[in-house]
Length: 232
Image (tube, rainbow, N blue to C red; front, side, top):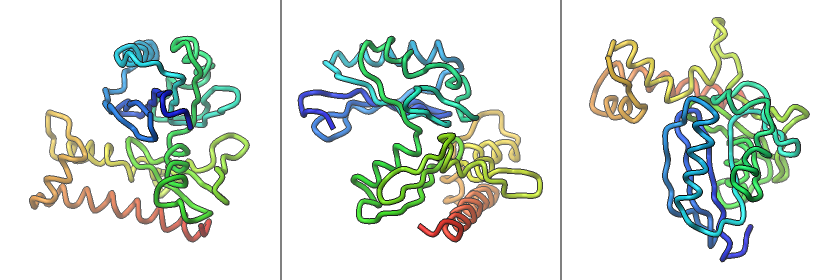
């Protein structure tokens, strides 16, 4: 936690959007987002432009990202929703670009730590956390501490194989992919968002209701298996 007069630039890089804001006075303010670019040079340019646009005396930048994040070495490994972030010294590159200290951590780990600090898990010791977006990520805490594993991959529940066809929880439990499925089945020319499909389901669209039902079924099955397997 920083001094009240020392703001942090906070960034969450996801497979669909990049969200950012200013953390100061124990509050997150001036939140905004942009679509995740197709390449690292484009993303780095966008991020440095965001920092410059705030015109604030930031003391550091905190970044959450998908993948196996090695917070010490400052690199990301494995597969993730944004593969171009992997296998180069991303922490050092960001530190040079921003000209100030940078911390990085897996996005689901960040969310789990936030819940343990101020949210639904603040009064318990052992938790499993699912983060649902472009894919499905997760995190494990024990006695309030993250369990990351030797390859920084603990909690990547989205890679669980759920069907004989080798479909994973990330494929079946992602709202983004659910919307893509609806668009494909309806043979629509324009992209749909998950919010669009939920709205259609609420308004009686039977195909949308089926897609939403399948999504919730797979997420529930994954959560149940994790609960009985790890017993948080």
